[in-house]
Image 1 (tube, rainbow, N blue to C red):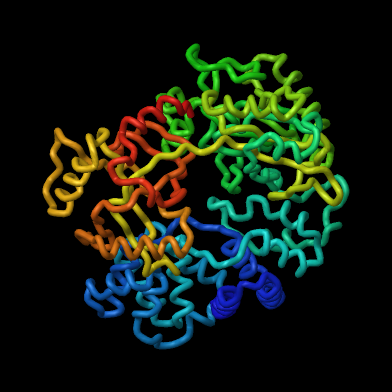
Image 2 (tube, rainbow, N blue to C red):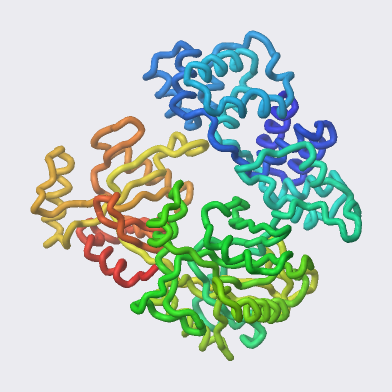
Length: 595
């Protein structure tokens, strides 16, 4: 733990990329393989399932520190991070035994066995371990058992350090790391050795990879241009393949060794959640890997057929897919209510041969040939993402304008000669053509009134940055009627059930600059009405323009709707409270948004 704690301190103390890579290389050169495996796992974003509940950590910290509950909570609010708070309030350690224990021993022999133990046993273990760790060790311990470990290091940076340490190409390391951080697996010394093995370690014809391993996903770069002449900077439209951009879960389906695995873009193994996709891929030739979108598809007669598609109907709203993936048990009723399908749009492997360096148009032709062959026989059909004809950019811009009514997010633009890259690349390789772009439709927006605020975490712990917004239940007659509601709120009078009200409808915590957050924080402190723990109710004063990607009905919210990816677009200093939007405005967006 001592060596890993020192690495954490080094990484946390600098923003220089080269310094972080150097620190990682020093650690990898000194650590044994088992410790290196766990370090790479955590630094790359791996998160084992939470081992100890936050409430348990808090209760044991209060008991071990001897602080009254109110003082611990006040400290937590001031610090903004539970692990840091615990590390600061605990008494000095009695010895350094825990710091001398290796990271892999901590994880495999101490922490992972906690799962399933009684609260009493967990409390006893925590108290003992805290007595043998210094402040950094305690901080890391809480992060590791609470599932909240993170430091200023990206997976790409870890791959770069591994490549430099092992003398390998970073792209090869990225490919080997696919699936390494899946929460259902634990890193091992053997898995780490496979990451850093020499490039020629694989003997011809003997692939020692885990057969379930997917490829690194190729990510599209956002295209924010609205005007056709800006999009035209990409060159002639005929050099690009255009497809609809679906609002589902990006995934790869891997068929090798007679088995099927389904991976999300976040490298989460999701095979057990989608039995339909396993049944689909069982018909594929062995050694086939496809990239595409996992969707719930509406085959009903009322669904509009996507232009360019042979498939009846269209994609169902993402909220339906979200309900499906949130279920632990997949009974017949759930499977029938949200039938999942796969919309394939790239062929990465066929006959155990990697296809990623072939030009985009060739990979598409091979994918179409595979689908045609499979679909000739009875069984689940392999559907392909429809391609859109567009000889010029104005024609494709017209297609993009139809996206919202068709339940899709816009267009994907893929250069016909690009290879399938790794990560987000604006080119398919050295001197290669521009690769993939996503040309999304503009987000939806609504003007809401700030009514509650909560302090952030980490560096924002002392600033109110997490806000709750409301809209009017109907249009106010005038400014005076709206002011009367605000005055009633200030006087803590209950809302008139038959009169004008502000109805909470969403929360947001991103989109403003640090300076804007500070300015809003000052307004919140000046207009606080009540405090409920970390939350403050605020006299309605400010109107914000909120942007979001989609809207769906929700029985869990008083407003009856839920927004997808809400964020603050700007503060509407120019808009008085009575001109904020209403529930009726949200209803109109709900009708117009088919996702």
